[in-house]
Length: 212
Image 1: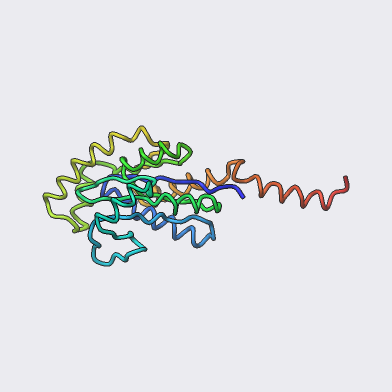
Image 2 (image 1 turned 135 degrees about the horizontal axis):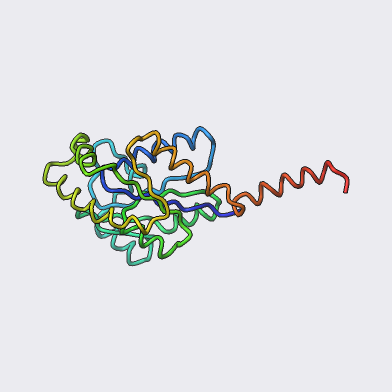
């Protein structure tokens, strides 16, 4: 069995990557394709409606640092005063089983993952403008004005890292951005290395019907 592909999706806070991921997995379920979303560990408190194990693995600081010491994370970083990390074992087990894995991580985490897994497919999502990002952060009502200002300042430093990614999507229209993300995933799945087993099965069917 060919191994799965590792996809990295990064974006400034409020750029809309969560919506793009949700749409992609809705389509994945409809198509019966094999991709899982990597659930990160974090030390931040759950937000209203978030469920442990579905949205994040919520852990305390001591538990998180023990995992760091044990090389338990494929990547980890401190973001806005909280710690976030991706389980190395969980990701590697899925990839070895031929399952694609999607990581939703920031630019710090992406740099770490690409150092370990240069074969990962990296995608960066941008807002169409500064004002559009500010408006989105304000409308979602999750942060006070001081936090919004801090997120906007961090966004600039994140956007400046776009060149370390293979693909860039400007999320001006969510339908078009979703189609672009789906196209990237489909293209990777149709490389020869991923299609080899399918091609062999087609050839075997021909061999069984056509006399040698």
